[in-house]
Image (cartoon, rainbow, N blue to C red; front, side, top):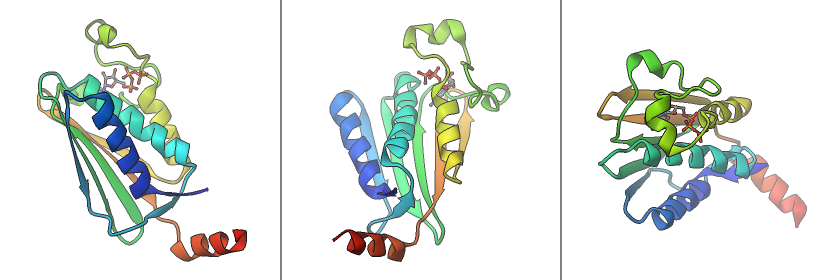
Amino acid sequence: EVADVREIVSQVYNNFKMIKPDFVFLLDDDLKGRTPVKIYRNHLEQVLIILMDNAVKYSKNRKEVHLSVSRDQRYVNIAIQDFGEGISKENIQKVFDRFYRVDKARSRGKGGNGLGLSIAQRLIEGYHGQITVESVIERGSVFRISLPIAKEDTVKKNDSLEK
Ligand code: ATP
C-alpha cells in the first residue's frame, strides 16, 4: 500500500490538538505536496501516535510538542520534539528495547508497558526506514523517523489501472 505521509501526519496532528487541548502542538510542514511512501497507513499512524503519546506523557510542565516533516531526494523525514524530562545518556540506548522503561517507579503512574518504542522501531525498520532519538535530560527529546519515498509514477499507474 502506498500512503501519503503528509496527509497522515496532519491527521494525527489534528487529532492530538483535539484530544489534548491543554497542549501547544506546532506543525512545520516542508513537503510541497503529496509524498508517497510504501507503508500500510495504519502502521505509520500507529508509529506517530506512539511517539506523540510519549512526547505528551513525558513532557512535564512544558506542554509543547513540535512535529515536522520534510524530504530530500530519497527520504521523507518526520521529527517529534518535546521539551520535557528527556532521557539520560545511559538510558538512551535502551529505550527501544522491549519492556524497557527508564524509571519504573516514577513512570508507573503514567501507565504503559515499555512496548511502544520497540513496536515503532520494528514497524519502521520493516519498511526499510530508520528511527533515532536525541535527548538532553531535563531539556527534552526529539525522535526522528525517515522512510524511503516511493516513486510517484508507480502510484499514478496503479491509480489509473483501478479506474
Ligand atoms: P507504552 O508501552 O505504553 O508505550 P512506555 O511509554 O513506557 O509505555 P515506550 O514507548 O517503549 O514505553 O518507551 C520506553 C521508555 O522510554 C519510557 O518508559 C520512557 O521512560 C522513555 N521515553 C519514551 N519517550 C520519551 C520521551 N519523549 N521523553 C522522555 N522519555 C521517553
